[in-house]
Image 1 (tube, rainbow, N blue to C red):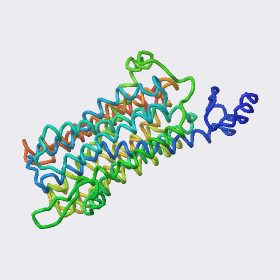
Image 2 (image 1 turned 45 degrees about the vertical axis):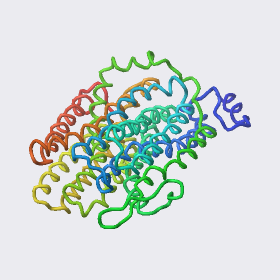
Image 3 (image 1 turned 180 degrees about the horizontal axis):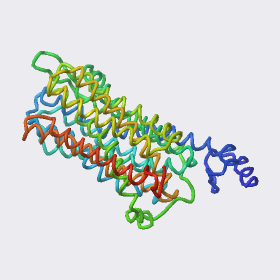
Image 4 (image 1 turned 30 degrees about the vertical axis):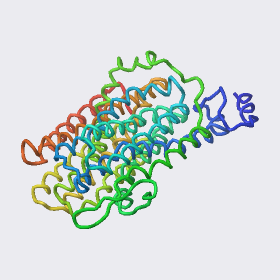
Length: 441
């Protein structure tokens, strides 16, 4: 192996060679870490942009009726939910993209295509007569951003040794997930200025005389998309020796633990992304004067994800997952209580606890997967579980809409979530924590 390392070090080009072996300590120290780190830090902004485009409707939908549209509350929740439905479905396709086409190639494609919905939304919101069907189509196209997570984590998992996968996946996923809070923080600021007025169109005048440029919420991301696409093209690598046909990768659906880990990841990341999509609309419905704080939940959840991966590398993923599920249950109970009391401070604190726990749990469950499955199966399992969990961004907003329409309160939805968390705790304990469990992780 020393000869292989020497040959690698003599390469003048920065790209990785054919003998990629991150589990070999000599190779990893001499060259592997450098290449893996470079790919990770290009993957992060690409994934962040994907989340931004995926979740852009969570903030655009809030302001549509303010600028002349006349959509019902149910229609607005649907616009916020549709990207989740499409994105989750596309994740099944994206999961196998890396194995079929290579990580760099797929990252270039999946990043560049984000410009399509970004430009489309920027044009459509300027005309209040734009049909709802067109808005639904654009919301569906934002699902392209949702698909990228599965391919991104599958790709990064190939670069790092098993002992560092939890931390690497936590950084990639956590900072990528930060795109949700970025879009929710930046949008309220950017739509109040005519930054792109010269090329992007005139503003929309509200009833109180204030002027908004809602199209900026989408147009602002076009240039970053172009820059990151070029960075991926010039700086990322296709890991050699990992290409597999979709049929070869699809063997994971026969594995029992694929489905168990999918359930656990739905409980953690599914909650994070679903709450992120619905939180701005919930705030506007219950505490409209506090809408500017909508970004906080996604920010803390995304920040918690790398911490969850790192702690799990130290203490075990199943232990951390169990802890987060207990905290999520407590957080949900707190939200129910303070919603009934109309207490904003308690509501916000409980929801932020829920967000942070979901973020940490997202990191811990992803740390468990590479410790349960062999390398070539772990990558598609990561993508596969992420695909199912992404449906949370569709079902949770829809569940909130159903809950308030049929029972007159959002609390009913939270009781459903609590039952789900309790079942998840039981599964995690039975398969990965109890004394005679076949797999300890």
